Length: 166
Image (cartoon, rainbow, N blue to C red):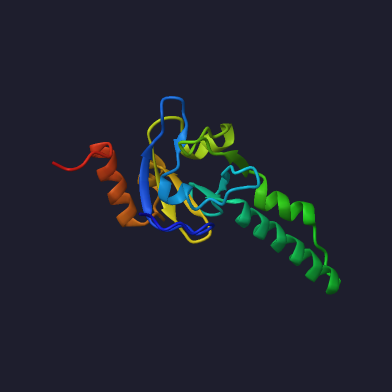
């Protein structure tokens, strides 16, 4: 039985993008996305700051990041420094969308997110604490900065299409 810790993501997993272009979030990540007041799992998905992948997190992390911007604004005001709150939100969230996961944990990425994950193939999920990365395997294979173990695991997964070794 998996340990459910809302807002905390660890481990690595892989999943195919289905025929409709939907990404199925593996249960080890999906179960840790906090439920909202309506009992739904809302996943915020945006571009990674440095790597050619997506990052995903729950509403708790979205709220924390928003609060950080507001604290930065307050700090700047007390120090008589300029602070463009709109620019800070734009920098952090301009390529971020909220997706309600269906009962199977799937979401259909919009046009912007498909720039990072494509419309077919497979994805790798990598937990990194308060959020997780979503990699499209072709981008992962070409990324010089990507973890070499992850790249090797992705290549094996792609070769076997996720089936057990014989």
